[in-house]
Amino acid sequence: MARFTDKVCIVTGGASGIGAKTAEMFVEQGGKVVVGDVNDTLGTEVCERIGADNAAYVHLDVTNPDACQAAVELAVEKFGGIDCVLNSAVKMAPGLLKDLPLENWNLMVNVGLTGTFLMSQAAGRWMIDNGRPGSIVTLSSIGGRQPYGMSGAYSTVKAALIMLARHLAIEWAGNGIRVNAVCPGHTETPLTAYLQDPEIKKGRSEVTPLQRVGQPVDIANGILFLFSDEADYITAAALDIDGGLSMTVMNHLPGRKWS
Ligand SMILES: NC(=O)c1ccc[n+]([C@@H]2O[C@H](COP(=O)([O-])OP(=O)(O)OC[C@H]3O[C@@H](n4cnc5c(N)ncnc54)[C@H](O)[C@@H]3O)[C@@H](O)[C@H]2O)c1
Image 1: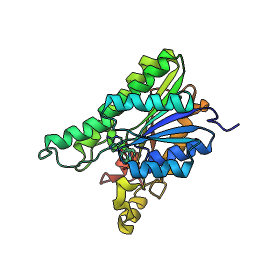
Image 2 (image 1 turned 135 degrees about the vertical axis):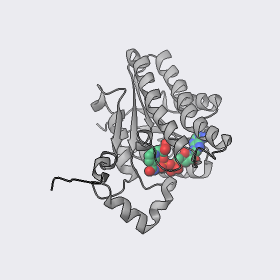
Image 3 (image 1 turned 120 degrees about the vertical axis):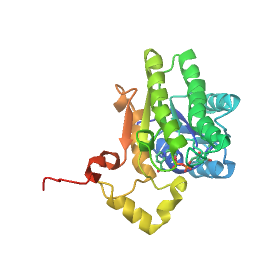
Image 4 (image 1 turned 90 degrees about the vertical axis):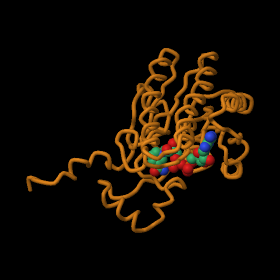
C-alpha cells in the first residue's frame, strides 16, 4: 500500500517550488492534497496537473485566519479530514536591517511567521477536536540557523519558525500531532531564480560538500519522510537538507589546515 493512502495534506504556498513538488509527490504516494496559495493561476495549474480527484485548489492568504479555517473546511468536506500540513508560503523582501522599511519587515513576519502560526493553529485545532493524529512540517531554512547578507528579516523569521515548530510539537504531542521543521539550503525554485545563472549555480555547487544545489524533490523527500509513519517518533526536530553546506564554516578559517 502507498504510504499516504487515505491521508490528506494541506500545502500552503503550494502553487510553486517546494510546496508544489511536495503536493505532487504526496498524491503519487497515495494521498489527497489541498493546495493553498495567493497565486490562483499557478495553484490551479498544479491541481489540474495532479488531477481533480486528488487535489483541490483554494485561494489562501495565510495571513488571514478565516482563509486558513476555510482551507481546513475544504479539506474536511472534499477529502474527509486532515492528516498533514506543509507550511511553505513565503514572501521575500530582502534588505539591510538599517534601511529595511517597516512594511517589508511586516510582510515577511506576517506571511512567514504569523501565517505559519495561523495555518498550524487552524489545522491543529481540527485534529485535536476530532481526535485525529497528524504531522505538520514547517519550512525554515539554513538561513534560520545563521545570518547572511540582506537577510536579517528572513533569517529572523526562519529562526522563529524552528521555535514555533518546537512549541507546537511539545504542546500537541499528547494529541498525537508531530510538528517538525525542515531547513533547506539553496534549492532551485522560482524563489531562487538567480540559480538560473550558470556561474552562480556552478559556484554554489562547488562550495556545497555534495557538489550540487538542491532540487525541490530533495526537500520534498525529507518532508514526506516526516509526514510518514516511519517518522512516528520524530517531533520537535529541525532537519537540515542542504548537501552539507551549513557545516562548512570551519573550512573558511584562514590558517593551519593540518595537511
Ligand atoms: N528555495 C530555496 O532555496 C529555499 C531555501 C530555504 C528555505 N526555503 C523555504 O521553502 C519554502 C518554499 O520556498 P520555494 O523556494 O518553494 O518558494 P516559491 O517562491 O517557489 O513558493 C512560495 C509560494 O508561496 C506563495 N505565497 C506568498 N505569499 C503567500 C500568502 N500570503 N499566502 C499563501 N501563499 C503565499 C507564493 O505565491 C508561492 O507560490 C519557503 O518557506 C522558503 O523560505 C526555500
